[in-house]
Image (cartoon, rainbow, N blue to C red):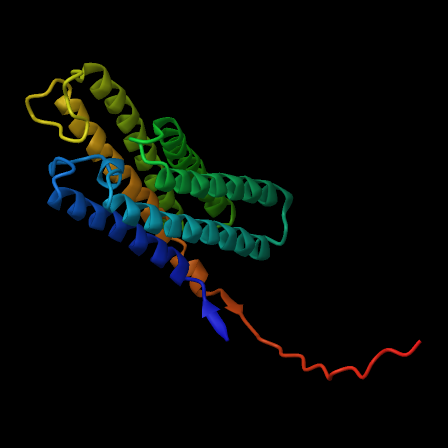
Length: 244
């Protein structure tokens, strides 16, 4: 049986975006967050939407790790083990793996329970994810991929870097300006730091969407790759005993 591997990045994109939309709808319906531009993590921090958030983001982390590894193996096969490409490919594997691990930390440790672990996971997901994007972009140019695809990956990596920087700066500004009486899950337009909060929320959503779309650029390469799965059953006759 042959399995087409292009379904991995497609499933990663669909599962992740569906998770964000589902938890947003649930959290807004239950009045757990402000419906106007909440942070992604805020939509999955309160039960019972946190259950869906954790389960499906863990699934996304597994799909991301599988996609990163298959991409690593694919590049090994087509690069003929060139030294410079091999080093860059291994670095990309490490960055991609750490990004997937960070996503799992974000899924399992909600910000209202263990904020330190949650923020560490978010930093790993975004920071290592951006490094992974630039590593794959460099590999695209070295492998002489189509120029349009290489440029697309470069543009996506730069955009993701800019939105991530905007998210970081705006989040720090929003927290520093926020009043102690402000509910972080229910920002109001009259709250101090609200413009910074909106900027941070928009930047976070854009960063995540662009990062997920980056994986979709692997679909064409993965269409040329398949995994063969075979099942061999060995029938062993019952032994009559061992003679010494």
